[in-house]
Length: 78
Image (cartoon, rainbow, N blue to C red; front, side, top):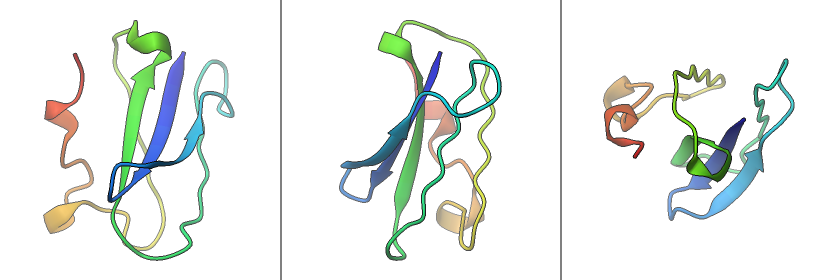
């Protein structure tokens, strides 16, 4: 069961969701009150699961530093 967390630049959770998508998938919709840096974290329930995931972010400026859409992907997980 995937969980999605949206964090602001200081690391505070501003939104989270574990349902909303088709089947067991998660869907998080969020309209930022201001421009800035936000991070999206995809995890499993109780951090107990592993597997493949696909993230899609839409909206103006929905990229990471240098235009990368996923600037921490290889460093997440344990």
